[in-house]
Length: 249
Image (cartoon, rainbow, N blue to C red; front, side, top):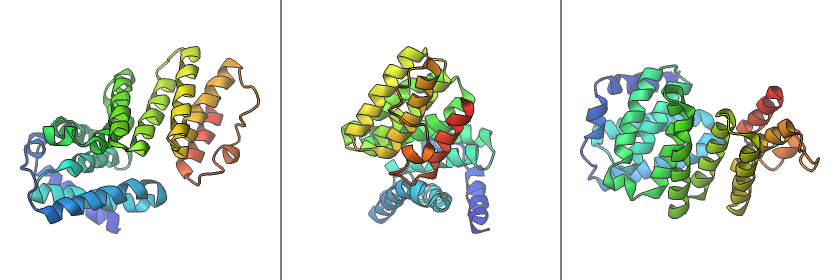
């Protein structure tokens, strides 16, 4: 009930502002607000996997703070995450599309362009969860490389790896020829291993194993058992991804 209460409160606040209003809000000057938004941004990154039920409350808080106080780099992630909730949880694709446009405007501002971690995470959220519902999936492929490069440059290896993971999922769904797809996924998995990003690597491996099965090139070294692949990670999304891949095959 508390989540729904905060959702309705946030939704009412967003109905009073337009996309242009969000994009042109003044920059936050209060250092306490900036630091608070940064702390919530960091917590959001962790709870998405560790405690998903906390995620909406943090997003609502960040969005409300941005509307009251103005924008900063973290606001871009706040509105992108709210767009994801509108699209994937609350079933409001129209509002999700509007917020993604606002997040894109913020992403292109000079202040955010200099913050690689924000650029990497915002691109991954917008293009993985929202954009492909409103435009051809092929249009999401190039931005993931941009997000990967931004994350790598900023030292945000987790965000960089998840951009590669998201690109692998979209490549799998976009009709890329299987030999080329296998080569690209193998390179992605190798990069994630070098970055020590096991969750993203496991997601990519699930798609890679599907491609190998389809090409009949599975050499038996990789098991398609969800428990075996995700044994070092308790992330339920990884297990769900592998189960879905097994069902598709």
